[in-house]
Image (cartoon, rainbow, N blue to C red; front, side, top):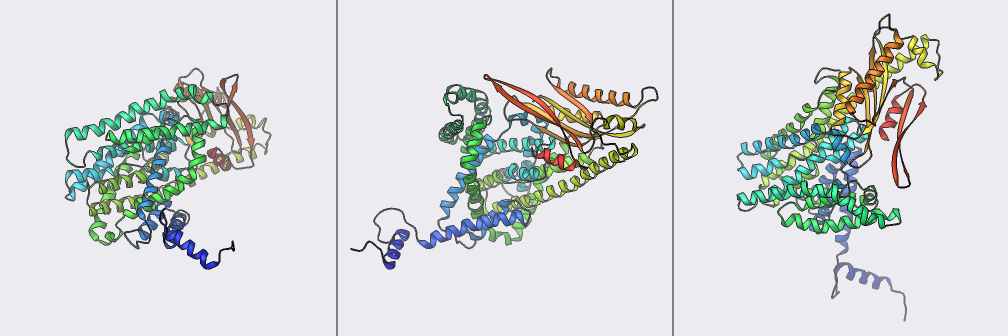
Length: 605
C-alpha cells in the first residue's frame, strides 16, 4: 500500500479540514475565509504605514480607514468580524495594563499641581463644551452627557510619538504633557464607569455606586498598588528568586493573576473592568524587571492587537455611509469645537521665559501643550462606542462624534508638528548665533583654542553688557512641583533658556538631573571688573537654584557654555554589599563648531 498521497487525495483532505466538509467534530474554516483574514491583516499593516510614513498622520488613522472600507459598514469583506473585534478588545486591555506599568511617579511628582490642574481642566472643559453642543443640537441630557464624555481623553500615544521624534520628550514642557495625558487616562476610566450608571433606569443609587467604586479602586487601590504591594512582593517573592533574569517573569505571572481578579471585581462593582487592568499594571510601575519583561513578551503582540483594535473594534463601527449626510458632517464639525477646551489649557502653562506672556518661547509652550492635549485617541473611541452600544446615543449622534474624533487625530498632530518645526528653527538660529559670537571672540583674541586657557582669554574679551552663554547642571531628589519651580527661577534670573533637559529614573523617590543652556547679559563696573562680575553672577545663579531645591544634598554647577565644549554630567548608581549609592561624574566633550548635534544627542539619552 502506497504511503504517498496523490494530489487529488491531498486536495480533498485539505478541503475537508478547512471547510468542515465531512468532519464529525472540531472547528474548521473555509480556505476563502482564511485568505480574507490574511488580506485584512496585511491591509491593516499597510494602511497604518502609509498613513504614518507618507501622509504624516498617526498610523491609527490608516488602520481605522482600512477597517471602515473592508468591514461590515462598507465592503463587508472580513469573515467573522466578531472574532477580530474580540482580539481588538484584548489589545485594549493590554494597552491599559501598559498605561499602568508605564506611569512614571517621579514625573508626576516633579510636574506637581500645575500638571494636575492642566489635566483636570483639560478633561472637564472639553466634556462641558461637548455636552453643551450636543444639548444645543436637541439631544436629551443623558445623550448629551454621553456625547460630551468622548471629548475628555487625550491620546498619550500620538503626542508621545511626535514629542519623541522632535526630541523634546524630556523637556519640562514635554514631561508636563506626559503627566497631564496620564492623568487624563485615569479620568477617562472614571468617566467610563460613570456612563454605565446612565444605562437603564437612572437613580441616585445607580449614579453614586459607579462613581464611588471607580474612585475607590483608583485612589485606595492605587495607593495599595504603589506603596503596599511592591514592598510585599519584593520581600516575599522576588528576593526568593535567585536568578535575577527571571524576576520579571514572576512579576508578569503575579500581574496577570491580579488582572484575573481585578477585572471581575471592578466590573461587578459597577466600575469599568478597564480600571481593574489599570490598577494591576500600576502595581508594577516601579518594577524595572516587570517593565522589561512586559515589553519583551507582549509589546510586539500588543502592537498587532492594537492595529486590529483600531481597524475592527473602531473601524467596523464607523457608519461611513452616513458621512455623506450633510447633517452628520455639520454636527461633526461643530463637535470639533469641543476641542477648544483642550487648546485652552495651553494658556495655563506659566511663562518661564524672558519673553512677554503669549509671545516667543511662552507662545511655543502654550501651542505645544494645547495641540498635544487636543489629539484624541483610543479612549475617546472607546467611550463613543460604549455610548452607542449601550443605547445612550443614537446612530446619527454617534456618527458625528466619530467624525469629530477622527478629525482631531488628523488636525491636532499636524498643527503640533508645524509648531515644533517652526520653533526648532528659531532655536537652531539662536544656537548658531551663539556659535558665531564665541567664534568672533576667539578670532579677536588671536584664534586661541586651548581648552585650558580659553575661558581666561574670553573673560578678557568681555565688555559691558556683553552676552554670555551659561550651562546650569543640577542633581537633587525628585520633589513635588520641582520642575515648575526651577523654570520659574530661571525666569526670575532673566536667563533666556535655549535648551532645558531633565532626566530621572523610574520610581517613587528618585534623583532628578537638569541641564540648562541659557543666554545671559553680564554687566560690570570699572571697580569690580569683568571677572568679578561674571563670578558673582555664576554664584548668584547657583545660590538661587539651590534655594529652589531646598535640599541638603542638592548640587548645582553653573559654568560658561562655549559652543563646541560641553560638560556632560552622568549619574552612576552603584550597589555594594546590598547598599545602593548614587554619584555624579562629569566629562568634557569637544566637538568641531556645532552644539546642535550635542543637544540632539543629549535629548535622546
